[in-house]
Amino acid sequence: MTFRLAPTLQAFFTDRLVRQRQARPHTVAAYRDTLRLLVRFVAERLGTEPSTLNIGDLGAAFISASLDHRQHDRGNSIPTRNARLAALPLCPL
Image (cartoon, rainbow, N blue to C red):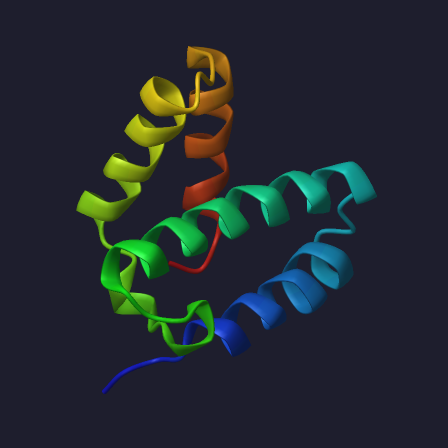
């Protein structure tokens, strides 16, 4: 069974972060940006549209490769990389 990523992420933002955790707008934006970067990276590597990704497409190898890409190719600092990594365990991946 495959689970579509888009509806799961939407529920995460609207239900979990906003309603249940009452997250502040900056926190929601930080999670949004982290996931947007990851989803775009994976979709590009798989040669597909972000809207067609399944949760299983976002495996550990892609997460690690995405973080490495941000740090080494895009010049993100180690604290920025760690902040992006810290956001992922709270997300429904």
